[in-house]
Length: 241
Image 1 (spheres, one colour):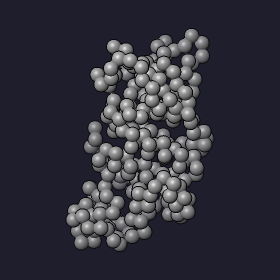
Image 2 (cartoon, rainbow, N blue to C red; image 1 turned 30 degrees about the vertical axis):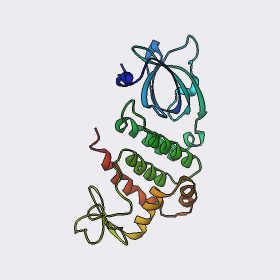
Image 3 (cartoon, rainbow, N blue to C red; image 1 turned 180 degrees about the vertical axis):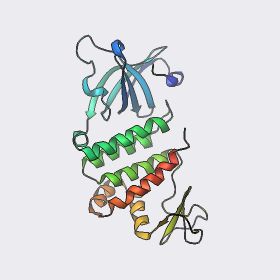
Image 4 (tube, rainbow, N blue to C red; image 1 turned 90 degrees about the vertical axis):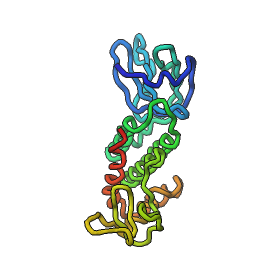
């Protein structure tokens, strides 16, 4: 049975909000349990009751679908009353690399978001990531950008521009430590070094606006080197749960 810890934070009544489907679990005769990530509401598990014939909500309960969701909060459960699909991101679903990247981002969110608490920054970053993947931005860069921006929404992101130890603006090469990047004055032997080119790529991937990132990411030839630094960002999620 899917828990509903977010019930206490909602008054009984109807709610309408845009968002996406993070997960779906079959509940037999009871229909489906759907994990929504909604604007101004955050992640919520809702019950999508079964219909007598075909699935009542069609593709609106598929993960990666974005739309407007109509939810009713009863004394004991949250129910999906209706849903209108806004975007199903078929270009992402039809490409193995894009789909694998999108699934990685979606699988990460349930473990780091607070149930029943809004995180519109993370929701907007997820939407942007799918738009970028749909428009053929390199998957490695999209993943790095999303991870850094998700960490920022949680207050955990390492600075892309300043030394974590002394606060000096990073120029030239740097070193990676558990908390972020160290400038040349604070660095020591034994840590992973990062050259200036790699720092500039990470800064661009993380800090450019959505539109500028869409243009820049398709012009750079160094997207493969960013993958190892996505693994570095993943380490910041390890102590959340």
